[in-house]
Length: 270
Ligand SMILES: Nc1ncnc2c1ncn2[C@@H]1O[C@H](COP(=O)(O)OP(=O)(O)O)[C@@H](O)[C@H]1O
Ligand SMILES: [Mg+2]
Image (cartoon, rainbow, N blue to C red):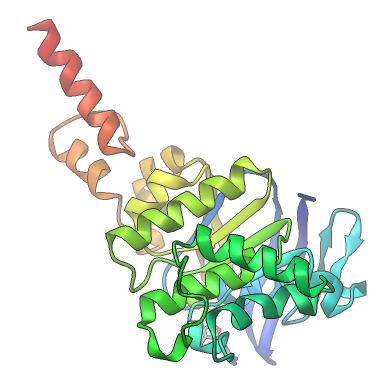
């Protein structure tokens, strides 16, 4: 993936009401979570990355190119975005047509588009549903269809806006696996998410937004250790981190396995 460089980014929907107040950061190959209170500007920010909104000041570079100079189709071929609400994205009557739409739109042949769509449908765990009507399926499945439609475009970066809402355990695990495999392929993953347990398990980098600014930017361990930042951003620690703290441990646990390993070691010493 090319890095995405954000320089002095400001944005307002209305004059006198600035939503993003001068962001400077670079999105790189690390899988990245964006967290923060409702209204912090997270969705607005990713819409700017995707070229759906234009900065009121500052610029966004994809590699060396200002995205303001790229056509919508060109940008769509490089950055994919899964909307928070799949109903904003889905409009075809079969899963296969829905998932093929994006690939066709960015210029794949029918055959390429179909192959890519079938692969994406399988990786979203929806194999066998190609002929179903998305409107007959539940919200959690529609979200996975929306994910498959974006995966099928093979963009170098994929943005997810609240992918785990309405997902059960199996859906969450599926989404984790999708993100990990994108990462293994060297593709960018940027995810807005409220589920701190998911953040702790999956992401290498965590960016905290508060009131249109970046309040913190670091590893999950760094961010979840900073109780002052979390307090300011109205965020809580992941469950296993809280449990470790309640039990009186100094360290910041991010995964159940880490804590289990520590207990196992202690038991051995006895
Ligand atoms: N289309 C819009 N027109 C005007 N204001 C908007 C629009 N979309 C979002 N906002 C406002 O921008 C702020 C940031 O919203 P948003 O980017 O959706 O935050 P988040 O995704 O962090 O919850 C909020 O105050 C919201 O009300
Ligand atoms: Mg949002």
